[in-house]
Length: 215
Image 1 (cartoon, rainbow, N blue to C red):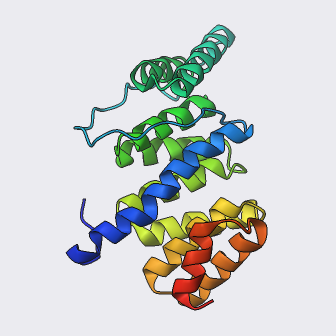
Image 2: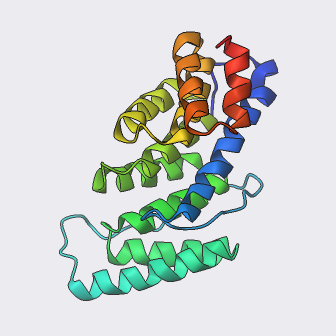
């Protein structure tokens, strides 16, 4: 996946987005509706296509919705235990039964992201966001994957939307600062880092970013 940045900047860019990917997975431990727990990233592997969801036009029965919820709960438990392969299977079953299950889509996206399968992660984050447009977590997740792929403008757009939806989310502001720093917009980067530090004074990432852009 091509990046618009010079080769010698690759290591630095990885240092920028990887902490956010891990932090994003930690967000799930804060009790939000997308509760999944922290997932450990794995080495790059060949991407496998996700199981196809049921056709959107087909009706989803109440029984399917209930069964999908059970699979989602089991997947979340497995993910928290570090059993990501088994969790992915359960999320696939949940989405197959109910393609409108936002929690399953979000959970599956986090697993794909932990495996550096960012195209699949972006697809699931997008679906989850479409089902719950008021939720910040899918936007932040998609932005993190966009940053990993070097799609910084797309990440910044998601983070702009996320910061408007939840202006008190420090992680959103920190990640937004990184995105705008990579775009060369020091003013927006500094403003974002400043807001992050005001919300979370011990955010070392935001504090170091603020120092870099001269805030």
